[in-house]
Length: 386
Image (cartoon, rainbow, N blue to C red; front, side, top):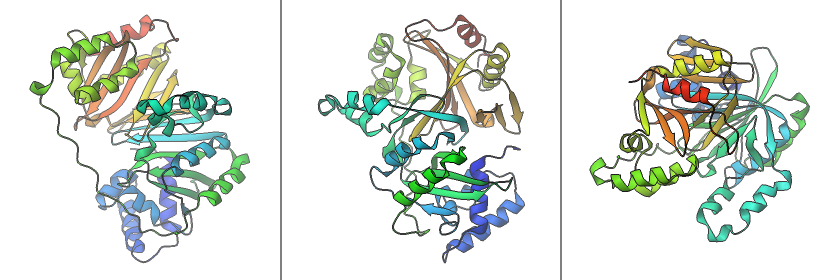
């Protein structure tokens, strides 16, 4: 596809010009050849073709354009907390079949007041304790809206590499223990270059080497048989929800997958739509200038966009939103199912891939304590059924 993600450009340069330790040079050469043969190949797909992880590809640039950062228990959280000082950034989150890019300034918690509020009584509430571990001083709402699960963050790098225009691009790039990319943050404020450099110096790992400890990806857990689920109790619990955010807890209580919940939902709560309905949803939202929310995550972080979109377009197997400060890339060829979902009085639309993994979720923007816009309800009702 003819979409050049900034992280792909930075990585390509890092691999071309990095000072390479023994063993890494061979991988870099293989990647250079592959890139020459398939210049449009995404980094994630290139790593798969070379039978390595994305993190291992990036690590071949350590010593020149790439700096390995600390990976102790709280390092990722503290790095993201310090990154609040960057000002304007491009935040990029992706999963296997979707990419969400947002440019803007992250909000900051006032003197960590929200953190102090969460901390009160946390020792008696495991869920609150878990939330405390994932608070990074901001990013809750606003232009850069992120929900963290730092337990799944492992490898971190700082990258400094000229972009296509010859300008120095600075980024922080994070990966899970299997070397899969979870989040990337690009500096878009030249005035903060010194802040970036100080962060890199403070969090620089003692050993700068490409020999990462990368573990095999954990196999996907087998789905519980529908017959083993107390469906009546599950449907009653669904109807008792008072907030959409209670849904994940519900899945855990009944030990079922998200898409399984779509099958077992109360009558009338879920309507299956065609996977290609994502095009109509985005096109109509743009045409009507209807504010929407898009949630895209990967188990380590979820990024949320909220606002009006204007430009949608297809590019190969991808369908895209291409606005100046917001880009969404969805590999619709991998979509298998979609659902319009009614929970706690709120309508969402969810799309899953061929492996049953959630790719993206959409909501209509609504004011707190107010009903969702009728225009959003109408849009979802008119999506093509499966």
